[in-house]
Length: 119
Image (tube, rainbow, N blue to C red; front, side, top):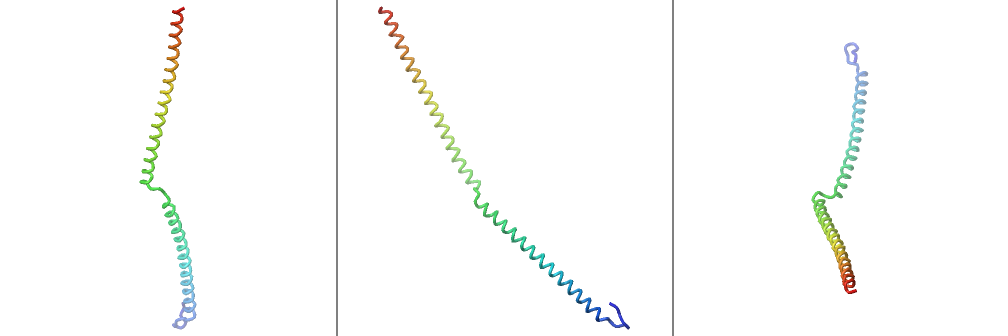
């Protein structure tokens, strides 16, 4: 701004007003762009958050896991017990077979002894 003969120069003030109006519009446009960018970013974050929430709803809870784990553990214990019983039965079967062969051998031995005494 300059003064001519002590008067205010209106030509310069109009240019200055246009300059500040342009700067304000430029700042408003930048602010609008930043706002749009932030809204897009927040929308993306909300979509991601919803995706995580949807995924989390498919997970098993601690209580459900513990209940299922206890059930499976009981079933494994039952299988171990049945396996031990079957193993014990197999051993009993082996003992029975050995006893039968022992009795047959003892019988044959007695028959041989009696036959040798008789002759």
